[in-house]
Image 1 (spheres, protein in one colour):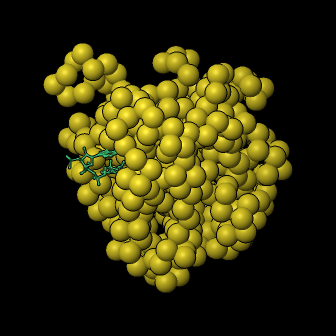
Image 2 (cartoon, protein in one colour):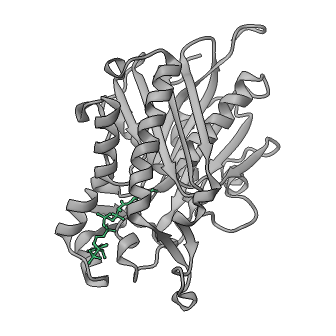
Length: 326
Ligand code: UT7
């Protein structure tokens, strides 16, 4: 980039980390009153990853960050933004713990709490820093140890969530990259998904709680709307989108939103069958997997959409860049 040149932001390197532990539907059958057939039919999930001892959000996020930095050609990083709702601890931030492991003292590092929309929020913040000229390269990490929040006595939620991390190096480019971003929230819907005891049952202990049906309906509506909005902002038709990379909440949500947005499933990235819902980490993991599988080539038009607790939502339209390109 030359001084005074127009600055856009692009993803210049992607990485993911998945813990080796696998939690299959058969193991859940032994924990709660559920069945492989119900989980598969209602969610599309066969198995999810479960972090082992010591595999905290910061450890998984650090691994994903290392891979993304390597893919981007080891650039100098100006800021670290981490999206997580399952941090190692309330303080210090998971961003600072990842910063320590990466050996990058001195630059700003902070967490964003926007649940399943966290990655899009973090990229939106990174893009704003880059376009304002406050940073040239921002390391975005989304990392979740969701199984540590799950109540394995609550069958309506425990079958959904898994662990993992994804990272993106977001850097300044003269053109291309992230063409449009939309993000929003509605705190009046805060009770739809939360961490705490079951409503009306304070003795039930803390866990991830969700009003499944209501969340499902709103998730489909918002994800469709956001996909359409970012497409329109970027000046693309649905037919011009090469890949839709949605938050992996439920296969039925993904199918319904893609259908309404007019994007056939052959052009939708799906890994929920193997990974479940990894909250903020789901989109960057899916991006890294899509790139590794040859489903993302430079110039491809990509749409990402997310919806989660808060409620929060976000989406972006981006043109895929050559890894490490400037
Ligand atoms: O990532 C953040 C955003 N999250 C989401 O968007 C998730 C949105 N919601 C969902 O994915 C779905 O609503 C769920 C997967 C959570 C539930 O699926 P559903 O088709 O909406 O089921 P439901 O909640 O309407 O429950 C239907 C029945 C109920 O039994 P009764 O009352 O009809 O006898 C549930 O108790 O299924 C029962 N059920 C289960 N049965 C077997 C709920 N969970 C299970 C289970 N195994 N694990």
